[in-house]
Image 1 (cartoon, rainbow, N blue to C red):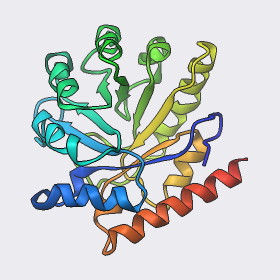
Image 2: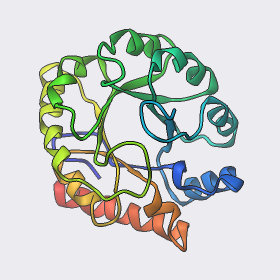
Image 3: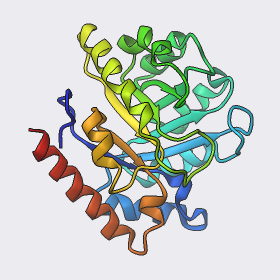
Image 4: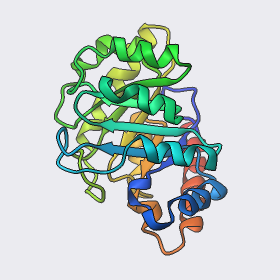
Length: 232
């Protein structure tokens, strides 16, 4: 599957926020074997968002468990303070919020110097103009389609309107970037996000809340293939 306006493949990134933490490694293995592309790790600090989840030690524990890229979404204040911890733990991709770090360039430089990829994320209510000056330095931009802080929220379509501006800014800079959507993605909303131009889809409860997780990942893979065919 290729997203409109992108030469990049569609990627499914199950979020472990919705996994069973008593058997987290097994839940990661399950989606990896079923065909997931990335493993999404939602990090919340109880300050930037009103919830507290996990930190770098969980990433470190998962790193030897899977060959899939670990996609870490920092929903935290002062992301620069903890960035090196996540790099050392084995994160492959790191996104942090433009609302928490209005000048993301130094953090992006640190990621790139460490051989990692990264970019910025923005809340649904944040104007897209806040990230456009930095798109050329990003490998990825994450567009939130729920208010960050909790899993299981309903999908908001309005933020998808930002994707075209992000893609256009990348094209002006001569750069191809991943555009990720996070929040309320399921088998019904993924095609809407793909049509807008996203190519990385974070799915939490829609994957781990299924009675048959393996079958659900398979259904996502079939959907990605079908959406890709339609986009060609």
